[in-house]
Image (cartoon, rainbow, N blue to C red; front, side, top):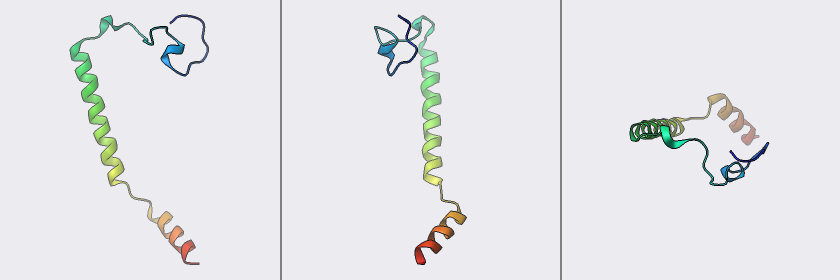
Amino acid sequence: MEGNLPFAWTTRDLSHSGVLGDPRAATAEKGDRILASLATSWVQVIRDLYAFQQPKAWKSTRSSEASQ
């Protein structure tokens, strides 16, 4: 990182090129593993959101307030 910046909004605030880190340790295998992990995690998040239901106590409280 160039300069002495205590806070940044974007990577360009920290680096003239907009890149952080040293890519020399990167490999296609590491990239594939990261992508697979991200995809698996996003699938789980979407499944959790799809299956989510409001707690019954919240529903009954809200419906009784609405009927008054």
